[in-house]
Image (cartoon, rainbow, N blue to C red):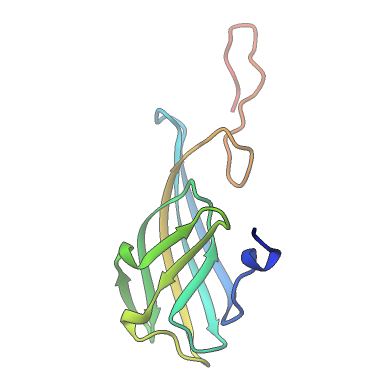
Length: 136
């Protein structure tokens, strides 16, 4: 059984800024999108992991931490997704963890195919006209 607390994020980190970019390819079959996000995080308690919400339909392709101005690429093997709670966990113990009082930036690049669900970033198809064409 899953409780509400299973969906809550740990309080070891506090996001203070998000910079997000999306690229949509409606010409691809099936239509796809990709994106990048740079999250500024205040470290409130020492931690060896970064936990965040993520939809199971997203495929993470690149991860990096910006520590003291230098980018540190992270192997995808340090990242896992719990599909039930829609939480991603990034193990940062190999880079020494994150220390309280610091500010770090997390870079994530991802891609996905537009699905049939109407959640998050989704593809809306209009009503067909007399010729069967749909406006997007």
